[in-house]
Image (tube, rainbow, N blue to C red; front, top):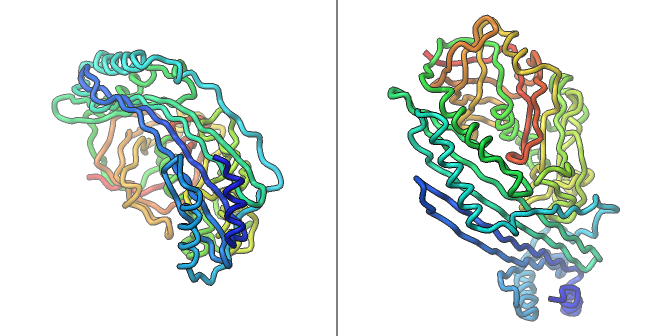
Length: 437
């Protein structure tokens, strides 16, 4: 399809500027259960969104038909524009001055036989069962792969294209000791099928499922608490919205007016980096065509400024940051920078306290505006610098802004993994409220 020619036709119909966003994806999902294939499905999606400025009104029209009729789409776009009466002046983005290099990672999964992928899953499921007799069920065992492409072409000369590819597998193990039941999750994501390690996935699922068997609540009180890296990454991810320009406009963030002010412990550095070349989240531009870059959200405890899409940057008269995703402000690949203390040494530094390995209820148990949270938790009780017993059915409570100023030590166990877009090392806090018995 000659998109530039269609843009020229749109100009003749009275549009001052137009833009195509073309998205396509192909995915494969395979699932096995108790030695049998339950799902083996390929799915392809395609969509085109045509946006246009007509008498200062920005409208859009879309289609999922690759062989669409340009005249009909332009006609629909004009009808949509005429129906609008917005006071807000909008525009089509002309492009950033320069862009990071576009990387197309080489992948092997397209050349791997489907049977080999099925066999991988069947072997993975069997390994989970074989590793520990306390595993009573592998409730989910899945392989997935995806190739997606996004193009942006507009009448201002912008012409961008990016391609994202990845594959992965996971297993969910259920363990029981006769009196209690726990689940564990193991996952790996890579560019290549050969990079997936079924042994690591199985071991992680089993270890996480069995380590909390027999866990009981502890006495309520205030304790020094280590939040393990995966758990803290999930907590950090739940609070990323406080850095959004949308929250600033809506006045739903306590960071409003605190740009360039110290808000956290000076050892806290939070980075968003869509340009980590080894990551499946590598992203040279956002959904609006704005170039991305590595940036600190927090640098040495100082809030550097809000993240923006086109709309919020214009409203607040601030620079673009390349955070326009899904018609909102979002973050690509974010992490808390490493400290210098091992997890073992964090544990050794506690006389009586907790290592929290799991936080639940992140969508309902916290308030991103106030920073307050109260989350069901599980992990391990620590005494005299040693892990002595698992604990669960407890609730960890606190305030995100306060706890980020009450850090004792930051761990050095950060891994920039493909399994999550938010990562962190383990962090030890001086005091958090824990409710149990």
